[in-house]
Image 1 (cartoon, rainbow, N blue to C red):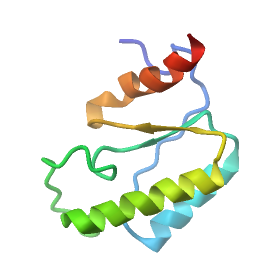
Image 2: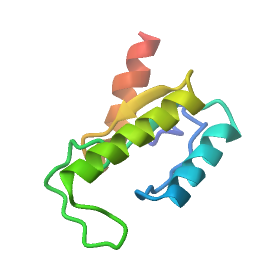
Image 3: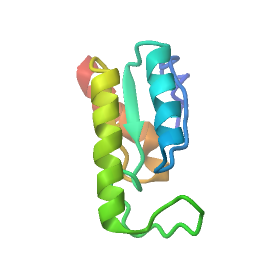
Image 4: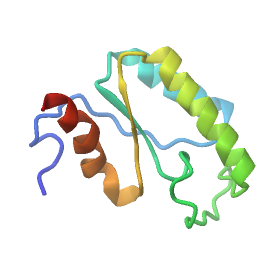
Amino acid sequence: QKTLTEKGYNNIKLLGLYNTKESDQKLLAALKEKQWDAVTIGSYVNGFDQAAHYQEEGVSTDRTDILLWFNRVLNLVHESAPKSKIVLLKGPHDFHDAIERIMGAEQK
């Protein structure tokens, strides 16, 4: 499988997010750096991957906390990068396919 760069996507930045104000600020700073073609939101944050069990400090396992976190992240992206496509991942290995699902469909 080709990398995103090999497929012509050169405007890429990867961030790991936490449910904290500091992480929100990191996301906002990245969103303001440039006009991004797309912003992906991982499967744990978007609620798709409910089977994931994180034992890391700062990562909530409470579904209500995760839903509120997802809503906050989604609105930050919508407000700060209104022209960017929002891509929701199904899992960690879905990144390339998810980009193609959204960005590839736009090119057809």
